[in-house]
Image 1 (tube, rainbow, N blue to C red):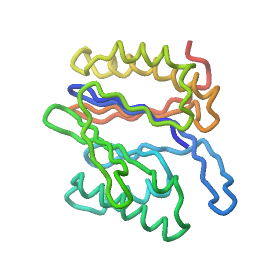
Image 2: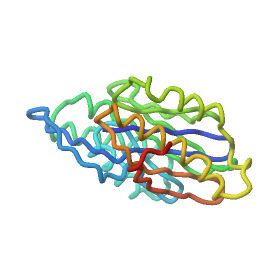
Image 3: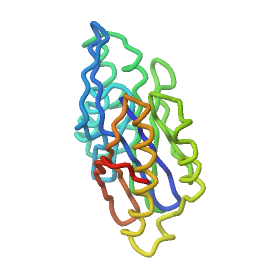
Image 4: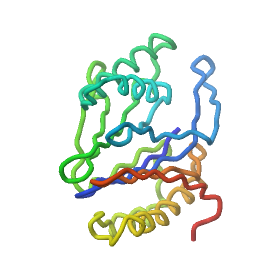
Amino acid sequence: MTFILAIQFQDSIIVAADNRSLTPNHKDRSFFSQDQTTKLHTWPNGMITGAGEEYVISNAVKLFKKYKKFEMADLVDCLRISRHLRIQDVGQHQQIQGTKLLCSRYCNDGAQLYSISPEDDQHDRITALKPYDFILWLVNTDLQHISAELQKLYANLKDFSAFTDEQQWLDFYQMPLSKIFYQQSLYDCTMSRSFDIFFQNKNQCICLHIENNAAPF
């Protein structure tokens, strides 16, 4: 399944996603689990990730990368096509129909996040996140074990421009995110404690993998 945390800043973005994949068997509703899945897909202008069925997400990304213009409207079409093909293959399923995407790209101010989610059976809605918008996509909605860490993270948000260099920027967010993923994984079997973090500013994209094996406290 998926645990994704994303933040839109004035001049940058940060997206973190766990590594656990639960592949459904639509015939008997069982799941195959593995923890080596990278959910952050890169493209020339940023990254794409999503929540829902991994097949639909990865196929939408593959289709999008074949386009030359790389417009957000193209990604919306790719998600719709991928979803339709999957339904034709295995039939209607809530996880397929509810699959949504999160995409970043460079912009004049640095980097911009867009969410693409189902609006109805025929259309998807694309939304540009506003500065300091905070997205949390997850299966287990019980956040009592990480609510204090989430509040602390949000209260201390800083734009990339507030740091002296990129390494200080990376270090500042790695520890609080590690705490959130580690703590929530103790109570949510659908996510892994390991995760990937994607940083993007006006200059570059940086992706880090965090094993998170030891309690980061």
